[in-house]
Length: 317
Image (cartoon, rainbow, N blue to C red; front, top):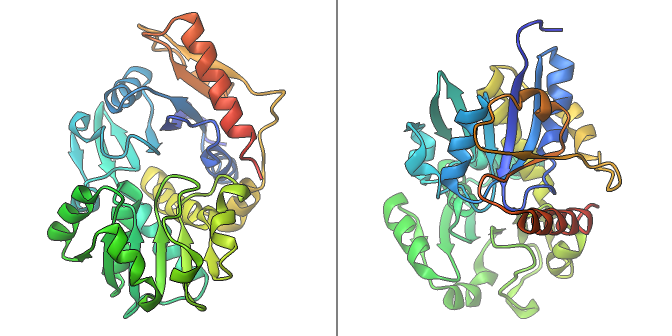
């Protein structure tokens, strides 16, 4: 085992207790003999994410909803991929300097490759223009696909399409043409499917960014299409993030085992981050989730914990 000081990594989100990222990374750290630990941190803003990384001396982080774009102004630099996508899902910290990366494009292309699907030449529609949707569109374009991006509110999708060089359509118009597409990527909030069965054709491939709940995926399953679910996306983006963090190749068979591990609702350990704390690295190893409590009262903290548990333990499959 590596005898160097323990490194701590975390996934930041709101909510975040549902995230399976710790199960993926901790099993890899243990296998590779790296003295590191990975946990979850609930934060209120993108600015708070970057403050906490610096305050606690984290070695790196992953970012989920809703911070992939909001934290960019508080970083020191962006990788070329993150700059192109204008969204960040991975952060490295070196001597207090934070660099934003984006591995979500590897998530979509890796999950397609795993399913023996080559997107080159495919006609692909991406629903959603947040960080995950823009990353998916970028990854598909890099792989040679013909990509259209759409969103419930059109501004972000239109802007991205103009910058990235893909096509754009209003959501209502895009749905009407869905039968002419080979691949549909859904990067919308869980449970939102703005199309009806008559829009779907047999043989359509659907890739869903959401991995949280089988019930939330039921809207996809009922259409009888070939479905690539979000846990595959999660795994493949984590492979690239692990390389960025450690320089090592991730063992995907170990990660598969990690994905199957559920938190025990009766044994969840939650700790608080308070102003002036800089010694939580040891606590991180003992916590399933930390909460940024610097500006919260007791009642607000209790509500966050209740909400997090409700969302996490109604979504474990």
